[in-house]
Length: 337
Image (cartoon, rainbow, N blue to C red):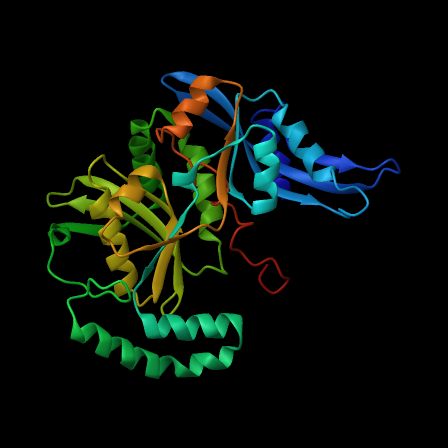
């Protein structure tokens, strides 16, 4: 937390985290803020990413959270946004003229092995004893997959397709960061990443032990041209969590297909991630389910910034947000550290 919310203040000391202090000097709430440089059609934008948000003892001071948020929104930044905003905080943002971005606020889920997914969910929610059913569930999944062509909503099986003309290859942090900087250029409102900042985020993103091992790939066409990338975390027999998907315009479906196939071949039971407008459109026909778990919301006094965000021309979520941090998905107990 020191590295995220205090050390990053050197980037822009005027955009910083806030604490809520009672009359007796006790700190009873805080909002973590990450400064981020963005660009809109060549104009540099100072942005603030709202992260961890905590207010203690709501019964005694029910307005502590609202006051913290109001203080952050009144800061010197041009744009304020968050991508993991829960329902309670969403209502606060709305009352302060925040704009909810619906096409950035959905989670997608692709079921790969339905019986194994059921066993994993039961083990996670009720008892690890359900994992003893894994051999049986794997047999059921093989039988289900052998019955059809693999395009059903409830399961997946790889089949000959145009995606076979493409490959996905393991990527180093430097290769991944370089391509990400190229691909983000297609968005009118986008983060300004340096190699150093992206490498730092990738180092954080690698450590999400609760989500599984990182899988960092570049998708290439025949001949070696890079057309996209993806990064997800997941272990065999588990549920993968996609942190970032990026592609050249028009290649979104190919990159998504390679992501899903990679997760299937690694033995995952399902793969999930967060939407963006181009990704959402490309997923039509991919047999994905969609649900709302958290909201992406923006706030600005600049009408041009709001229009770019609400028109779907901005790049949010993943590395343009807070999902890359270790606070989401890592273990911080003594044994884990």
